[in-house]
Length: 100
Image (tube, rainbow, N blue to C red):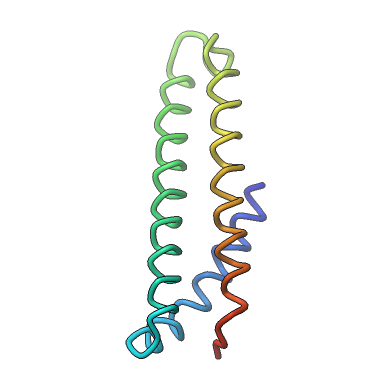
């Protein structure tokens, strides 16, 4: 999943530069960029939360075998699936616009 996310982020970065110049003239494009920005922040928040919690588990006396680690991993996976669905929908909308 992380390689797919990395690939998607490089595509996002490649498109953003061209899209930001065009958004001033194109309201639907501006709306799409706002959705993309919101989703990007959601991914960043999710990953930050994961890193913070994973660090706490690794520093506990149980290490990565902390009793709550399995539940945490499951919730994180579900959250990432939700975010990926959102990013896929935004990527699908991208097809409506022509970028350099």
